[in-house]
Image (cartoon, rainbow, N blue to C red; front, top):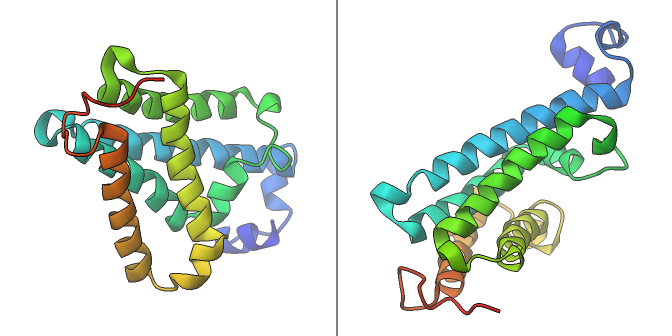
Length: 178
């Protein structure tokens, strides 16, 4: 918190004049993080009419992972209820739901009336897991430069889109339904 205050150009106690406690400050940051993530995911989903489902799926994955790579500290806090308990902050729950809704929207775009909750979880697990591997996992050690990470992300996004939409079928109509 001292570093946040220093960067803001104020004393380390100044934020507490505006916020009840440390977790309340973090909750405000988490809301902003989810809002930015939602905006990025929405922009990716909105590519469908002009560029198609596959392009939107790739752009959505990139949006999620690029957000995580650009703000790793915030990304970590957003998914740590032990650091910022969303049950204590309705605004955090609402902002998180809006981001999740964009992932669900992608699932509906990709799979239409055959979309399932399990497929939505697979999409989310893919991007979230990849982000975590690139930030804190083994990929953070083997892919040391932004260029290496971006090349890997592009290759993974292409392969994942093929798998999720059905290889060889750009419409995704042959996606296996559980």
